[in-house]
Length: 154
Image 1 (spheres, helix red, strand yellow):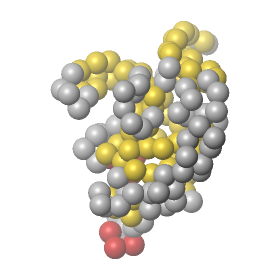
Image 2 (image 1 turned 120 degrees about the horizontal axis):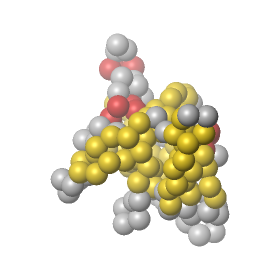
Image 3 (image 1 turned 135 degrees about the vertical axis):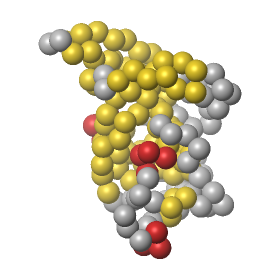
C-alpha cells in the first residue's frame, strides 16, 4: 500500500476518460460512499455472441458530441442500492479508466442517470489505494474543456 501522503488528491468532481468506449473526457462525481462506478447510458440492449453475453448501449450527449452505440462484454449482473435505498439489478462491464496520467481497468455499471448532474459516478473501488479525496476541492486535475453546448466550469 502506498504512503497516503504520496497519493494525488481528487476533488468531489473531476474529468476523466474511458478510452475503450471512445470517451476522451467526461465529468464525474467522485463518491467514496458509492462502492461501484456508474455510467449514464440512454439505452441498453443485450444478446449472446459465441456463448457469452454482450451489451450494446447508447452513450448520450453528456458523454460524447453525438449519440452513438458502444458494445462490451457483460462482466456481471449485480444488485445495486441507489442513494434513495432502492435496489435494482444492473449490468456491469470492465473498461479502462484514464485519470491523473494513469490508466487502469475498472468495473462499472450502466444506468440511466438522466436526473443526475454528472453522467458518471466514480465509486470507491475504482480509486481505492490510488488517490485521496478532498470534498472541499473540485477539478484538482483540471477543469472540463469548454464546448459550444457546455461552457467551461470554474
